[in-house]
Length: 357
Image: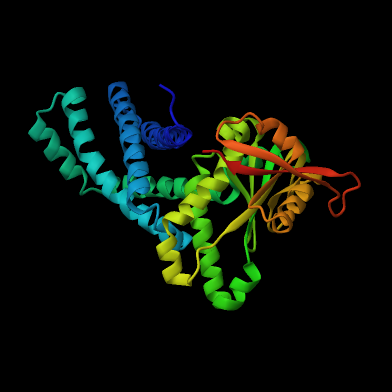
């Protein structure tokens, strides 16, 4: 059975959450063992196994609660509120997981009766060491939440590269680049005013996030009412993801047509330009660091997107990308121009993209 990208990514996130909490909870057990001079090895093994089971169950519950309870609402909350809410959820999970696991551990490893083991653990929960354990678990939960938010800030796969110093020196990478821009942005801004217009942009980009995962896309940067999306070449051309995301986003907005029209009096429409090729990736800045893409590939993609208005097309791509996607089922590619773009010495062949029936 072939799992979807969304399922694979969800399983990957759950896996790393499990690893993080297994290590975090076992660190506590090991420190406790080293501090106790007469701590029996049998109790250490019991602690490690219980901590491992707790890490697995707790991590899975935490990710499930996060995904299905408030994932869609957190865009309206500050980073601080997200941490506070996850801490409250964590306290509930700690209590829910602690009682059955430690009770079962007492029965399995220390030959207590179920009632005796339960009474022992309920009494332990009133002690100072248990308060210390809860505080420690909350601290590692806050750390996990912080790292998760940082990863979302910089994008999938970027945070690890930053931690390893991968981008201290410029690196070359082959990527597909999409410039996605709101149509009639000037007239919309004048009609709605800057506050409502900014809210419209927020809502549009929130809806865009619903289609990033199925099409294996990463947000590189938001620039006003424009967003720059990127893929590795393999992911971008797989099943035509770099083309399909535009139509998937259109369908997502269409589903909410009634809502957008009631809120803003208009259904927002977008246009896109795409290119593929070698770019340079580098970390820039000191007090505020960013991962920047440089190269002619981005300039050309931006200029192709600007031609959408000229040719009255919603999505245009370069010849280099068209050659990679020409046989992709579900899309019709047609050459519409061979022209000089601003800042380019050589002519660029441009193709339009339509969905085939």
